[in-house]
Image 1 (cartoon, one colour):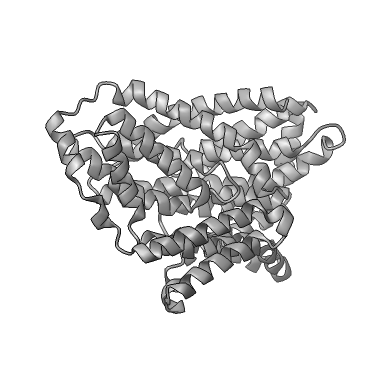
Image 2: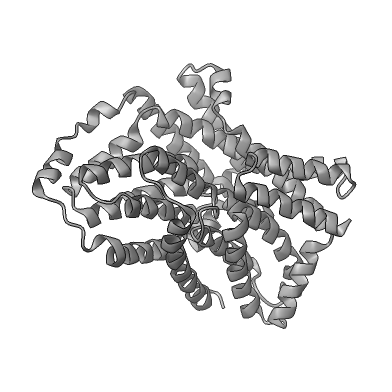
Length: 424
């Protein structure tokens, strides 16, 4: 049974990596197959989904809000305003686009953010007759990095927060500083390797200045409503420790209120929810429970303890680096779900002498920063590559790897230093 379960797990991720079948079908098929052959029973499946409902409903609420915000054209408007603000200066442009992307990814769905921002950055690069590749890649990596800043910035953070019982404010206090450091490293590398030699003639800069951004804002009333409700939702996340209403309730309340105010038909709103993403997570959670039942997770956890020889510092750093490698192969969501279970097997050996929450920060850094190594490291990367191809900028696996891996490695080294100085 052990080998069959591992074979199912590997086969599912082979399908995800090669895109043989849609991701949602792959994980759902894997989870159901594990159930049918007896690795996990129906009660355990239902219990597993029940324990993750907060993540799923939080995502539904945020998807509804982002959907309605995207209809206003505010993302494109802001990007053009940024370009005009820096008067077409390439490095200033890439700095501001990266910061906007990272900030949006910290509080919104980063997949939606990159889907909207990537085509705009390609448009601006082409207007300036520059290679759009470094602009797109900088935005993709900024999204991966920005998602690390908060509990809601990336699905991996939601998983880590749920498993580790970590609040929104704790993420903000512990991972946001590393986000700033990682973004600075990204921009420094991009400047010296791609942007420093770029020159834009004055005539082309004038064309950027002539773009009429106000025409892009299609619904100013909806924009005002969206900003008010999104701000209220974010405040609710920050104050949840005091109001204790739950992140899922706050998110869904904002999404449904905004849909009600805009008089949208429920079926149209719910039809736009990314159900494939939600069922991808459900199938994944079930498979992870099956792998846990087989003892694989406990085995890996024991190996980490064995490798660290009981040394807390070695264990913490090992979790970060190993999870970054797993992320680059299987994707950050699968990695976070798997390593969350591993960490729970490691914690009892250390919780009596140290603050074991450091393990969760290590996993956060490994998952989010490691996601920039390969094209399949995160859903954001896959979406960005697809959106770029549609906009005329093709990015293949090796091209992505050469750009992303060096920055990811530098950021992981910086995260190692950050963890050592702050926690170890």
